[in-house]
Image (cartoon, rainbow, N blue to C red; front, side, top):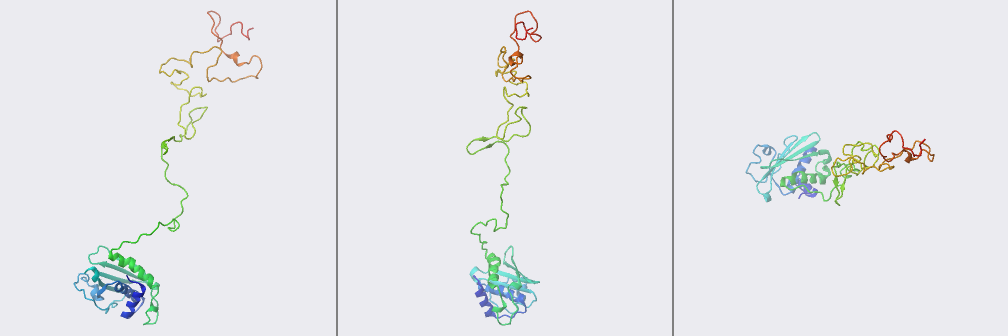
Length: 302
């Protein structure tokens, strides 16, 4: 595996002439392949040929002509330890960048890397190679991960731990955006949680059930004036019969269950007692109608 020291050693050993900073970065790429165990089988014009990868030559060649084209570089490599498969590397200068593409013989997709030249090359005195490069560690690391490892088919390393929301530059979440389910929900304990009822009242006395209560029509004696055909105040027997009644036969001088007396006079004044306004027991035949007048003997008889 190449590192900045072995790459610089390859550059010093070859002592190449540089015309510009793009030349320097391109040759650093070449030196990374050599330091990683590859041998150079073609460069310059032969490496640009259409049959550069299919050529049977496995001989190690020199670097003559590697930068004969202005702003374009090509190298063909082989690695004896990994068989006879060849690798073609092409570099293209574009403004202040060097675009690098590498593909193996029979490969489906090339590996690609864009390098900003000014980050790694310096204008310096010719011959002092160490002074002509900077950040060589970063350049070699990027070449290893983006080019060499992909050509070798190595998987991308996975982070050892999950990143937090702050490391991913994400906003922290202070709320749960999970949609609320509809209908009754069964608690893990087995308890059925009723839904919250919708709009609308169920009684004039009790407008509706509270949250978590199943709605109902109200029971006998709840004071509601909303009644229907099956209201128990008309048919209270519960046996499905249609016998009218009000919790049994009427009781003399007794208001029906659930009835309320609304006084309309001062309390405690004679003549305004609640019992005075009740219907008297039925009498024998004869006399007036009980709804028209009271029978003699009542407290209000004149």
